Image (tube, rainbow, N blue to C red; front, side, top):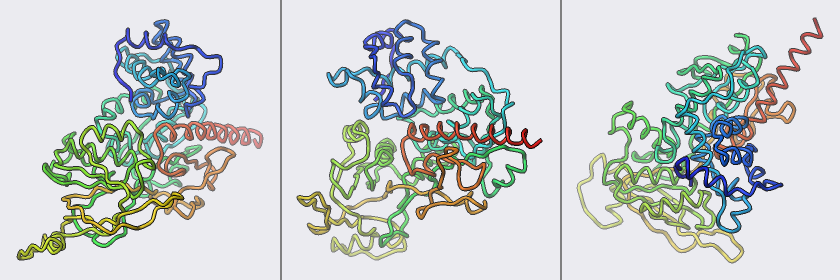
Length: 457
């Protein structure tokens, strides 16, 4: 996990770099940041040069420095990590990006827009990466965002304690410096369509709409109140903290017993946020063993340290209301409407892992009481763009199908896509990795189209 460094600490840490002839740290970075070069510049005190080097590959360095899984990527590949004294690459990246902001460094000039026009739908990690890369390549880029503020999952899906919202906003401001235009409150399929954008003269369109529809559990009691998805919960907390939503609408209340279903990073975010919102107890339920959780070890350990309880090898079977919970406990009370509409417990099937690694339902069932259940069991794409546009094909799960040449183009010419809407939910940096390749594909497509038009003339 990255930490804040002073200038002296950052330079001292940078000087520990061995400047390897074959820098495995760079091969461990999904976007191939020139890590050795920026660290060398930093070690020499050339912080501006270090930022310029980082900016060549990354449009969101202050964000990546904070939320990238460095322990599995660049830092994991550092040769010193084997000696348990690896370079703190994430902290150094964060330091350089913060220094650049504090000193108003602008190493890259704004785009002239002369190379072509591109519309970007969505302002999450994928959309921001494509917009930044294309602006650097001298394209005129306009982002269309459905929400009242850009940022997507960076703003509404990652808690403040992991990624400060002012950091997201300032990184987006850097894109404005590059010449990117952002239009908010523009919902694709409602306020405009892909056909509308082509009619307005855009040479290509990028879809970076993510996986906006959360998955739920199709089990008895799913209609009860008090059951919410992690994405909804995290979004309401951000809105409440910014004064855009009344505290009462966040559903979770002080003193509540909360169950979080799932064991990925989003589940950790939801559980740790619930602790901060005053929950009395927070229990994470997961149907496999601890060895199978997808959350980063640092996030899991932080949740444990903050008091989150983990219940492995338990599969949710049904939501229970107050009346059902009283019946199980042999408590008699005159029923009221709330008894049958509010969630009060979760029925769990115990799971056993066999010798060959299979997970089977064995060991009976148990009931866990609660006031609120937060689901972090995955997401799927919305079909708003696809349903209002001809020629864009999706697979049987609803994810957009793209091609290799030009990279990232959908089955409709001129329309490109990447990120979660293509590959499924992933980390910020993995969405950026694919989006950088798609930005190159868009540039290739527009250049070829304009060249062909010149030849025809």
